[in-house]
Image (cartoon, rainbow, N blue to C red):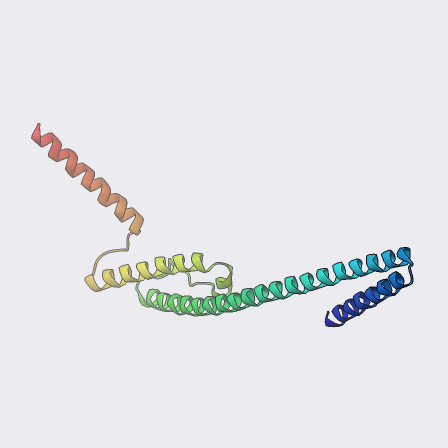
Length: 169
């Protein structure tokens, strides 16, 4: 790029010198041709300078993007490690519980496909592990699906409210 700029500068100077010489000799046509060449070389030099500036700007932007991508990669690697550890802990807790055969362990080989999905699943396992731990410590019966329990609680509350409303009448 620098070599090209030097060549254009040299051609500009050479065309200028030819134009001066042609004017001194009274050859206006040759002077016009030399000045036209000078203007073309000047335009090409400016385009070359602009192109170099754009290239440098693009390069700087790419370097920033690469740095961000590296940071994001490190963040995702750390997140993956954290999720694997949490999944293993939840699996161990579930496997030590009496009713653990209904939950399968995580497939950690697919963690890179969707950290969010994996994290949601781990949250479910952690909640189930906590629930199982609580039930095994309290001596309660078989585990109940948390969604089912919530729906049952809502229905009980609705029935209580209906009973209170009918008692008032």
